[in-house]
Image (cartoon, one colour):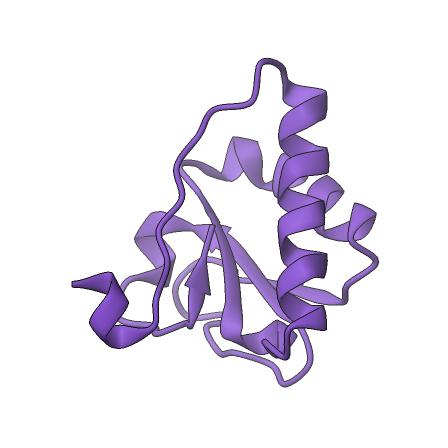
Length: 99
């Protein structure tokens, strides 16, 4: 199914939080070099308490980002910026890559 669409799926759990941040940052940087635009990437977390982990990873990739706020506030994709937010708030939005 993914081969037909050109999409890839990768799931692995790094051994500790530090390597998670480095793995996500490397993955983002590699895909941007391949031509994926930052606003085509979303880093989704389960709860607002985990937003800082996503911010750390995207900062490590030296990529601009925007945080998807609670409903009624910032719910739009911004050109040139990775979107960071909870899975719940990202419903209905489409991205080429979702981490």
